[in-house]
Structures are given as structure tokens and as C-alpha cells.
Length: 434
Image 1 (tube, rainbow, N blue to C red):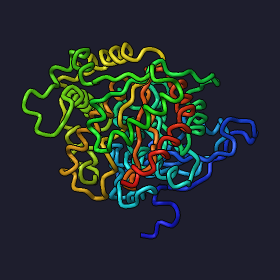
Image 2: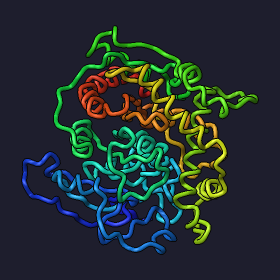
Image 3: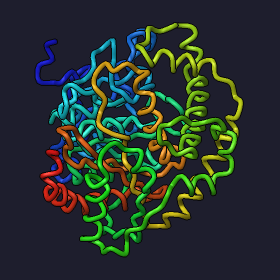
């Protein structure tokens, strides 16, 4: 396939100049790309599917998030490929091709913001915009070895962005380094500069790290050593997040699997949390797009077709309980972390899967992934995925979460921490080749 040097990441290349050519704007001189879920005036928003593009007119206005970045001084260089209707974390698209993972070409790039992650990983833009409902920024960031930020729910306008499930939809972004991640974030979040604040505590969710196939010394220990070096050992705490959720989120009871959860290690309360999240996601997706799907009967790729039709057939049973789960979890995690506490978990349960892996063999991996991804999804907390180099020649990452509304604190912390993290990964040079 003749991809050229674009890794198959772009739907359409074009140039949108910044609103002002002033050189003292925060994003002057930087380029960015946008996922094909954002409205850009004069272009059809394709939503990853040709039947959608065919049945929708060109946008009349540009999404506020995109306009904010243009006002901040950056130049847009195009729209990127995404998974159909944003309903996958894999990154494969049967219509437009799967963007090539620059970090691991035989592996999926992650989705649904696949092209946006690949343009950053492949050095085709300085940063990019994606969306994250169930994990669509965090997962491709991890798989492509770059930074990905899912902001606190509701703090960045999703106007002019095709909705997936409004209870969880966020505008996220990718960058190769923490300084640009922070600069883009401050523009999107409309934050003034603030001095970095050290974390009062870093809570390692030990049970969550057991869900990962990456050796814990390669991820957890790198983080612990870095935080101890910068902020002191007294900051490090340990917790079993599953126990916290089980004790403090009683509304999850109706989602707990009462049967035998199988032999694979899992965390029952987090499996229940992801069940609640996915139920509400299906219900809201149906309200947004069920009529269009039923009328147009779009041609959808494997895995996605099944999920979309399952959503279209969903009922409102237990949907109202999901709102209680959201409220209880946010309170529980706010109590756990406090103002400047941070929670550490793996972003995903292991290395990116190989291209065209049979979806059924990925079921355990997907279930574990959503156990991890639903923590920020349901609480509305902000989360950043931080690349930690390669293990067995594949990208690995760690995620930090902070309470709702502390996005600026988390962005600053990543920038403060990253050089030390890189140093610690370098010290483990031997391990990366084991």
C-alpha cells in the first residue's frame, strides 16, 4: 500500500492558518491535526464511515476547541482517520485503512483517535486533537509511545464535535513531549500559567498493576523511584483500588458478576464499573445515532458492527443507576486523593495487540483495558498517559489521574516529572532488552 510518509493517518490534508500571525502567542510556530469527528467549516465531518460522510452536509462552522487552538497561534494541517463512529479502541478502519503505528508497525495504533496519535508519533504534527469517551485518546497514546491527555469531564467544550456518549465524551490531545502537551492544554482549558505544585501523595493502585502483563519493575518501580527522588518517599502510598470502589460505590451492586468470573485475574468491582459505563455509553449512543443507524444501515467493520447494533437494541434497564455510580465514584476518589493527590495505574493491560487479531482472542485484554479506562471515565477525573520507552521493543506507559478540575496541576506535574522518569528508564536499560 502506497502510504508515502504520512503513515496513512490523514483523511484529508489542508492548511488552516492561525487567526493571528503574532509570534508571541502560546502555540506560535506549532502544527496540529484534528480527528475527523470535529467540525471544520467547509468540510464534511466523516465520523470514520463513508455512509456517514455521504449522508451529512459540510459543516457550517468550526468546533470551538479547534478555533481555540487556531487563536492560540497553531496551524492546522488536516483531518485524521478514526475508528468508525468512535466505537473501538483498536484503531483499525476497513474503509480508509489502518494508520500505521510508527512505534510498532505490525501492531494496531489504538483508537478511536488512531490517526491523531499516529501523526504525532510519526512527527507529522507537533500535537493533535482527539476525543476520549471510553479510552480513545489514552489507548492510542499508549500504543504509539506518546503523551495523551483526557481532561476532566465537561471542562472543554464538545460543541461542534459529533457526540458518542455525552456522560463521558471529552476533547483530548496528544503530544510527543510534556512541554507541548502542557502548552496545548493551557489553551484548550483557558488556564493562566501557574507554578508547579508537588503532589501531596502518589497512590499506587497495586491491584491495577496486577492487570498488566508488563513487569511491574518496568513501570511501577520507574514511577516510584522518580517520585521519591523528586518529592521524597513519604509521598508514596499504596492502595487496592478495587476495595475502595467496592466499599464506597454501593450502587455498583447490580452490575457485579455474581457467577464465577473465570480463572483469569480480574478486579470484580472494576469489571462492574466498566459494565455500568458501557451500559450508559450504549444507551446514549443509541439516543444520539440509533435512528440514523437503523435507517441508513451503514456498512461497518468487524467488531464495530456488533457493538453498534448491540447499542441500538439497548433498553433503559439500570441506566438510572449509572448516574448514582458516577456520583459515588467521584466522591470516593476525591476523598482518596484530596486536592493534590495523584493515582497511578497502567494505561492499558499490556503491549499493543498485533494487527488483525481475531476480536474474540482480545476479549480478556479488552475487559482488563476497560477496567482500567473506566476509572477516569466514570469519575470524570483527568488522566494523562505517559510514555516510558520500550519493553521487548514495544511501547509501554503509565497513567496518572487527578481529581476533577485539577488538569493544570496534572499537566505541570508531568512536565516536572518527565526528565527524571526518562533517567530512571535509562537506568533500567538492561531490563528493556530482556
